[in-house]
Length: 126
Image 1 (spheres, helix red, strand yellow):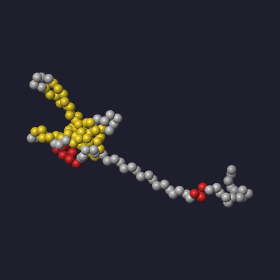
Image 2 (cartoon, rainbow, N blue to C red):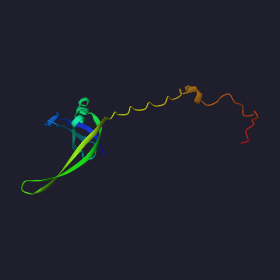
Image 3 (cartoon, rainbow, N blue to C red):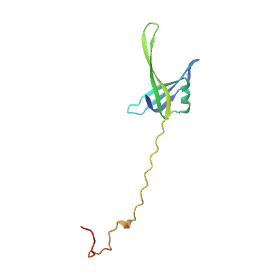
Image 4 (tube, rainbow, N blue to C red):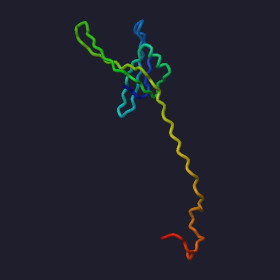
């Protein structure tokens, strides 16, 4: 799955434990009703965000992750995480240059002919 939009937020890396780190990216989609999608990059992937800046157009490849948690009181809850595994910069396509037009003929090229003789015979069948 992919999310395409403009980077709104790049948060600093969080060291959750000695063996786990994560970093949040928020991408705003560009549609009739823009969505602000929080995407989590984990472990070595947190460094993938270092070369990006707020405002850039990106395409982020994601996985949806879900987990179940049971509270000490026995209540079961479900959580979802959107995890990014690749981010690509989208470069706006440069407008294609228009093909060159041939030069316009001189204005006198469209003037009515004045050097004809109606009595001359022509080969035209009409």
